[in-house]
Length: 317
Ligand code: MG
Image (tube, rainbow, N blue to C red; front, top):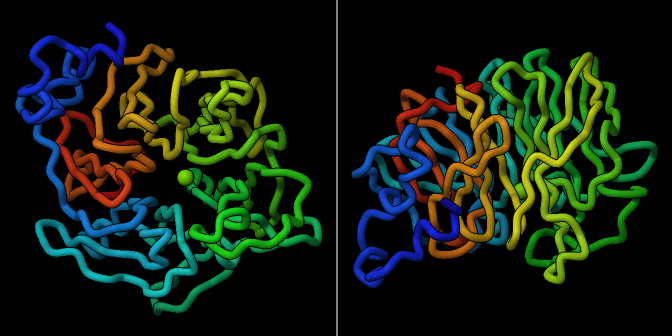
């Protein structure tokens, strides 16, 4: 069954009003209970991205990129402002010490907030030029911070602060634990979300520069990781419409991506399992909650959540 058919059955008028996770369940039975319900936690955003579960706060933190602020939703609680302004922050992640790492469009920086509240700039320049607008970041088992640097925050005023790019392209970077910054993949057109397989040996990267006419790739690529280097790049999944954005894996190695039509899920061998539809484009996703089994979904102005039968890979707790 194709993902497309999951919501295109007869009598869909009423079905669309039902808990829509259940509608997507055929290929996702191992992930979602038949009565799984997608709840709306927040609906007052402009463009929500970068969800991350922060164990020390028992909260989801996310970026409202275009509103230039970050929000926090305590587990079972009410959303509150977390950072305002946020420097048009986008992707967030947590390092091995529980510190929040944030990609900032407006400053072109990747920053880390220390336990005393101060900020450390982790990355800002490469080979003498400012980074474009770091989009998303993840932390490897060795403590290296991997991040993508497309141009959205310097080409779109709503996303940051327009200025010329000072880089030769939009690269994937690895910031080694010793502070050395290296461009580890330079052949992407707008690299965006990224995620490791549970064993850390595969890096998945979403390529979001796809053109409507299909002339540019709408793919998720997989690359082998060894010693901080990448090799054997290959297409893991190809989207027929929309573009992939944020990526996450669960402990069984399935890959999840925010896409133009909701959350798509693939098995580790690249088989499309299904889709959790959203009303509009879904940018980013994150596993979290006290047991790491809740899937948070940022979809335009909304942040959604659904309890799953799986657990996110690399979720502290
Ligand atoms: Mg992104």
